[in-house]
Image 1 (tube, rainbow, N blue to C red):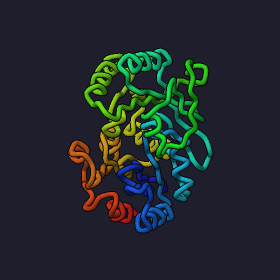
Image 2 (spheres, rainbow, N blue to C red):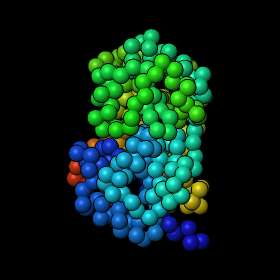
Image 3 (cartoon, rainbow, N blue to C red):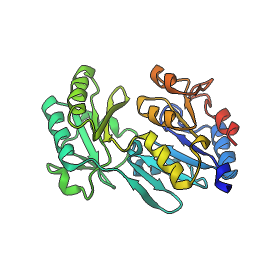
Image 4 (cartoon, rainbow, N blue to C red):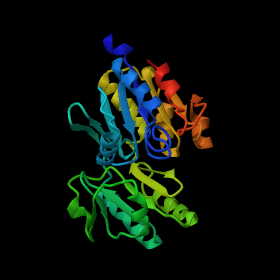
Length: 272
C-alpha cells in the first residue's frame, strides 16, 4: 500500500521542462526538489538518446532520488539508481535499411544510434543543426550495421528547408510496416521513426508497472506531437501553454504560462 501513495511525473525536455535557453528556472527546480523529497518519482521523457538525456541531467544537476530517463520516445528506459537500461525496444535491421534507402533516394538526411554514437552515412547542414544541442559523438560509415549490436531504438530524419519533401518521405516510410513502426514529428524539422511497441505513452504504462504505481498517480507534460501518447496515457495529462493545438486537444489541463515562465511549477507543487 506504500507505493499506492507515491506519484510519478513524466516530463518532456525541450519546450516543456526546459526554457528557451535550455535551462530550468530556480522556481521549477525548487518544485522538483520538493516533489522528489516527498518520495515521488521523476522521469525525463525525450526523443533524445539516453546518453544525451544524461548530458542534460548532469549539466542541470537533475540528480533527484527516484529518477528515470526515458529516451528515443519510449524506446529505452534507464533506471538511474541501478545504472542500467531496464527496457529496450528495437527496430528490425531490415526496416532500418529500408528507411535509409528511402531517405537517400529522396534526399532527406537520416541517422540512427547505438549506445554510444550517432550513426550516419554522411554529415552536413542537417547534422550540424542537430548537434547544436545534441553532443553525442558521430560515427560516419557506409555500413551502419557493423556499428549496431542491437536493433536501434530510433531513427530520425531531418529536413530544414523543404517540408513537402519531408512529408513525401513520411508517407512512404509510414507505409513500410505500419504494424511495426511509429512515424511522427517531434518538431517541424525532425521526423522520428521508432518501434510501434515503444512511444512515450507505452513508457508511462511500463514504468508505472515497474514501480507498482497506479496509473492514476502519474502525470505527464509535453508540447509536441510525440508527447501526445504519454499525455493521454497518464492519469493527468498536461499540455504546455506553448504546446501545439493538437497537444492541447489531447490534454486534461493546459498550463497558464509557457515554458519560459515556469508553466509547470504550480502543477509540480500541486502534485505533492
